[in-house]
Length: 329
Ligand code: SF4
Ligand code: SF4
Image (tube, rainbow, N blue to C red; front, side):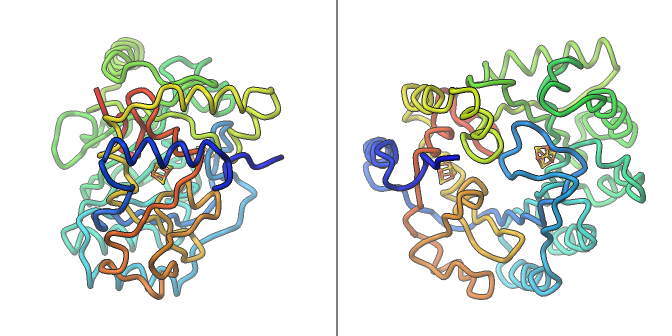
């Protein structure tokens, strides 16, 4: 597949110009308030929209040496948020150790949880583990209907996801408790932007509550990023250019101050540093600072120019999109 997202794509230059106009300066990182750690590409699912090409056959996994380095960085620098992702991060053998380490340091620990992984062998106590350590859960559930969800994630995934949510509710997640926060993550089913986050949250709340007795604390919407498996799917259907144009046309300057690359460093399973996990997938490591985990330095990373590309319009279109959902009302 051709790669339309490199620095020399004219859209990339237009993104730089428009963010500079919005900020009054070029796009730079303010610091490292969140360390996002990608533990590997193995996942029990193989979703159509997956931007990291994860799946059951993937074997990439963070090494023991890199895990030790992550722990040492957290101990030394104590950035407020540790964000664990994958693949399914729970499948990494040292996942629980990292959660315990982050919590012992008093950090907020976020886990990007796909719900169904708790039904894999040996993981059935995940709800109790999450609750014990007050992990903040971001759970992907593309849609509140079986058809809408399973078209993207595969047959049977919705039913298993609902069972998982019921188990999380049973230990207090999604019931308004500050130490059991459950956020659902919605992304659209095709080559269009998410609808209003507020309206979708209401629809999810009504449907999941009425039909399945499931509750959650909030819903965030993410745009599908035009990279990896989703980009290949767009390209196959002749929709890639149209989708990129649509993202650019919907550029919203109000989203720029909250772009997640301004406060996040994303660590890949093989120990390299990126401005975000989208850049990780495109093999665009940080510039202006050592991009290895071994050379991690918050001082050097602060103020670095963010590496941008045409895909960045996925973060600034409409209400915007980040790991925490929409960026503007
Ligand atoms: S989108 Fe999430 S759950 Fe689906 S394959 Fe990718 S990592 Fe796994
Ligand atoms: S894709 Fe990454 S680098 Fe580009 S705007 Fe989004 S968060 Fe920032």
